[in-house]
Image 1 (cartoon, rainbow, N blue to C red):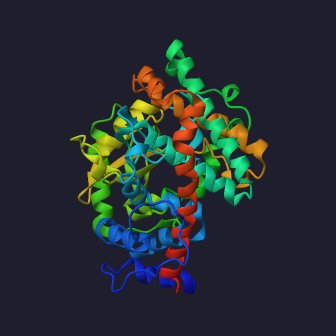
Image 2 (cartoon, rainbow, N blue to C red):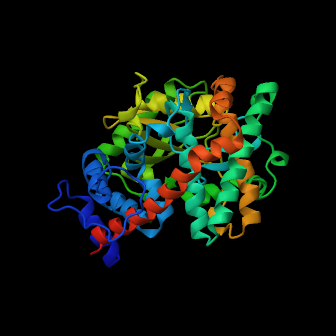
Length: 426
């Protein structure tokens, strides 16, 4: 039974046209030099692009209403639309970027070599774009989290300076010695919340994890795992069977036992996503494998950058291979339902930082150091470190270039979220 609020969202999610514009905010943050209606833009975007059942999109809309952070995470197309109006925030130094860098898109996990690490973990929006676009999105995320933690504006500025200083210093160190890029980030390199996330990842138990998602060779359905209709189930199964033929594992491995629709993430709730239970190396259930199949759609920054010419699934896989080598032993791409799906293993060896629980500047600072490290590593893999450093200048110069916009845009997000809430639940 849906709550009245979620039921209202579900009804809105299946509407593909808008009868009236959203109400205007009484006071809008003075960020943008052009007129735009955030709620109307996003509703029209999702009416064109959403691929999932109404309930899934409704949950996305509800999450965007819950907090300014949630709204920011779910509104990347609006962000890039706004950013395109500010050429001063751009740069001639174009590199591969993750495309949706924020403080919750990094986590701890065990890679395909059995090494526990902390790194970026989402590349659905990966594109080639100015490195400054990535930095300003991360800064806005930082400021939104700092505001939700009731930190002062001065503290937010100090954290922003710390992030940019760490980023520039890490880049300079990698320019002098790129050897660290050949190995995963170790816990000793990210003391604090990120190291604690790595420790949490090491405590994962395979048997308990499998039992949480499956029983007697079938997936457990519930709030986040939903039964598929027979036609879609056959399509996903056939895609996985074709995938298995390309794998080096022995015959029998990857036999599909069950598939279902999966509800996870926030931005990705508007795309198809599936969970598959497949046979492991042996005939029993104890070594079964869980696979996440996530549809890759056009990147949010797509209208503002040069196209790569690859399928979206291959674009995302290529980004994983570039930014986090050896991240997943089953990383691959399949086609199903007219879409391109990125295949990854779902494992118990995963740990996240609860950013909303970082309530002090000191705790935030230690996490910001980890964010600076993984961002610098990602950008260093472009091979354009000297060009980035030359364009960025000193940390103070980079702060002056990005700080004002990031602070103003964080306030704009809060204003837009209030408009969104009024539009969705008048």
